[in-house]
Length: 301
Image (tube, rainbow, N blue to C red; front, top):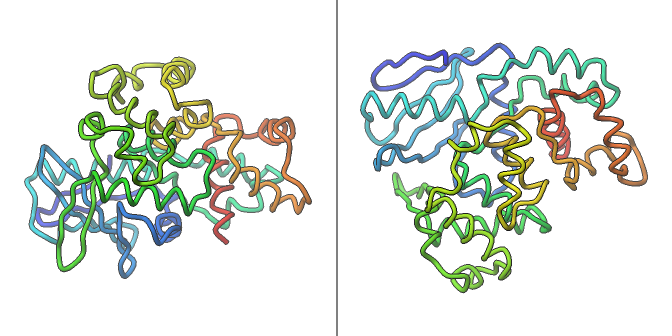
């Protein structure tokens, strides 16, 4: 991790292939987003470090990411943790040279890879949040998924208000492990999704599932472990492996957004079949997650 702590603020030095504006496009894709706020080209986000709330503001200046703390300067350890969170959130460990080399020769990705140059997979570092967001999004449109997430966060999450703006934290698995299915059905979750969400929370609360466990397994083991839990099918597992665990080979091949993006880029009347997508993806080996993320990005035009 390449960064400097200047006491009142932190400066992070991203790799060359980094485009902050492209990251902002992704982060501003829904007006219903409740876990960060974008104001005047900066992102405000609340995290919790050792039971302490930290609100940070992320901006960009002359090839550096500038991280400020609008409320008060946190401890040195907390500043370090904030920097580490941002480094992981924006996937800054990833060397994208190989991806761009592959994409330049690919008949589909060559249409978009330069256009979105420097876009990184914006992750979800918290395992519980990534799992629940994936489950919320199963078989519903994105707008309704954001609506449900907002209700869920505002009902069960913690918050902090500063300068008239309220910043939210995703609910903890400990909190959700203690609620009932009816509590979620009141927010318009289906009974089944409510059971899945509370079941995952309980599994994390009793230690059967954690990010640490998964990070000590290989790709096949992780997929097998995740899909043993109710509510986690192959698409959800791949989404979480891509967004939380940084597997470049994860490929949510059944994703509707991926199918729509391919249909658009191929100027086709119909969505491609899974077999056709497998053929397109033969070139993407090792970069399936980035290929998917760039294809999703093409949908925001």
